[in-house]
Image (cartoon, rainbow, N blue to C red; front, side, top):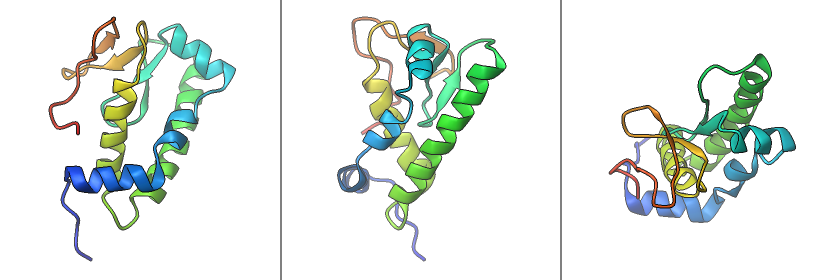
Length: 127
């Protein structure tokens, strides 16, 4: 099997064909919405959610479950088009770009940032 190189064209095709709405909508439960608004969870650069700081076991379990759902979406969407990691990374770029003021996201240095009124800090490899 030939490995597809990470490229904007591949990423655009993957995103258009499968959409990233499933990954973005996976966490729209009231518990997730509340945790996101409270800054307890945030979007990571790798396309997965992260627990911000020290949170309870319930938050960690919720993030783990949502990340398992995201991985399933990424696995199906990436099949034959890109690697799961490439698809997840590109989705992470979109999800960080879509954060709203006050929400947490992972900065380039790995620290948690709070989105202000301007654009979030994105990896230069983001499409």
